[in-house]
Length: 354
Image 1: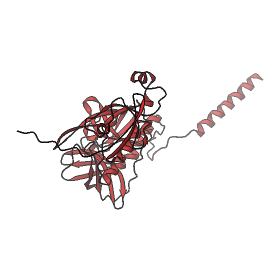
Image 2 (image 1 turned 60 degrees about the vertical axis):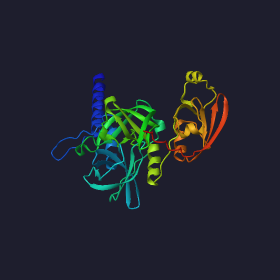
Image 3 (image 1 turned 45 degrees about the horizontal axis):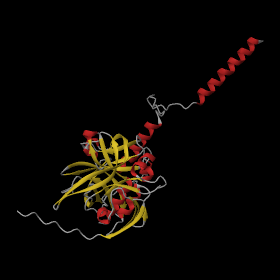
Image 4 (image 1 turned 120 degrees about the horizontal axis):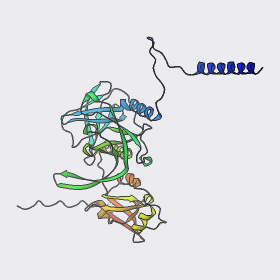
């Protein structure tokens, strides 16, 4: 009797195993009998390959007499399409756009920002391209993966992908602008990536793992394995300025959000632990609108032009709407101080006497 029970159990187990094998998904076979492996290696690789494939159509290679750079589709307005890219200087000569499907056409310069090198190009592109989705860069964290697309060195490598790490989601660097009237310093708030992107990736888009644009590469330091990207929010604000033929103004300060400071740092700076908002000003450029308004280092900026400043990113939309009249509310030495100014043009410098 015991042997019969054991036999029944073995037969039942074999039946269950055959049923499992029958209903398992099978790998598809081709006509010649080859089997394609469709199992996902990991969510990591699947996300990266999906982003690279989906965003390739919006990528362009930009060719000028000065060389090759990267760019991306921005928007379509009526019969015209607009593309974003980055140049070291205002481009001269013919501009040709090359697309992933082999199509090429000539473009014209609609607008150029000398501070970031961001350029808006206009072209009569006959096809529809899905616009890029803007990501929320406030959610970025150090060590997060990102994917850059570009055209490294040659059109033969157009649409190449490069893996990056977010080295710092909020960095402020000082740059210099050289003009006929001399050299002036300015600050840019950027995102730093740990990567080996070369200069031909400049102007190319960088996406998060969800396929959202987090910025455009505006400065690659390959010898230091660092690239700086202009955050997506500022990229689109600046693009609209260029679209309307407007010039943006830079405030000329940099700081750190009080909310992001640990308690020991607040104590070192003499900031009350109860203060949860505001921007602690670390640097103010001489001659800048911030200095002329009366802002000082160690001030805590609470409001600018009536807008509350809770985080550093809150400054961005305010400065892009900034005109000649400025007002501010700051906390200085434990008291609140209101500042205002009408910015008159600075007098032109007298040329040096020989």
